[in-house]
Length: 280
Image 1 (cartoon, rainbow, N blue to C red):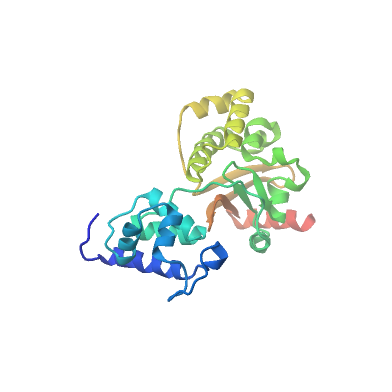
Image 2 (image 1 turned 90 degrees about the vertical axis):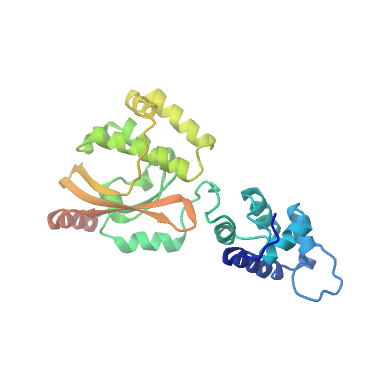
C-alpha cells in the first residue's frame, strides 16, 4: 500500500466512502450510542464490519490506500449497506469496472415496465429472462407470437417452443438459422447475467439436449452471439408471411431481464399486425 498523494480517482473513491459512511445510523446497527462528533459510523466501525484493517480503510478514505481488490470492495459495500447501484458505483471508482453480476431469478416485471410494453401496441413486444422465459408481453405479441397467458409457465420458454413445438418450428421461415442464433444468444445471455451456475439453467439445457438432437448438436459448438437486432420472418396462420425488424434492450438494474421489440418491417406488415390486434 502506498501513502503518496491521492490521484483524482482515489480522491473520488475516498469522498464516496466518507459520504456513505456518514449516512449510516449507528444505533440502528446496534452500535454504541455514545455521543459522536459527526453523523454516521466511525472509520474503525466500518473496517470491523468489513473485516479489514482500520488503518487501510482510513487510507482508502484519504485517497492513499492504493487499489483495493474486488473482494475488499464487496465487503465494504456490505458494511456500508450499499444498494446494487451504489455498489456498482463503488466498483467503478475503485477498479474502473462494474462488479460481477449477481444473478437473481425474475419474478415478473414492474407495473411501469408492463405499461411500457402496452404503450408499444400494436408493435409486438415482450420481456424475457436470462433463461429465456417470457414473463411479460403486450396484446400485439399475443396475436403475433403466442397467447402466453394461455400457456403453462414451463411452455413460455422460448427455447422449448423453438426446439420442441412443431407448430413454432413451422412458423419460422428460416428455422435452421433461428435455431443456431437462439442457441448462441442464449449461451451468451446466461453468462452475461451470471446465471451459468444456476441449477435451472443446467436442467433446461439437459432437457433440451435429451429431447432435441438439433439443440444438442448446436450446444456442443459453444458458439455465442448477442441478440442485438435483425430481421425475423414468421408464417402466421391468419395473416400469412410477416416480417419484423427486431431490437433487444437491456432493462436497467435487472441484468436477468431483456426486452425485445418486433417492429413490422413494412407498412403492409404493420397493417396486418394492427388488424390482428384489433380483432382480439
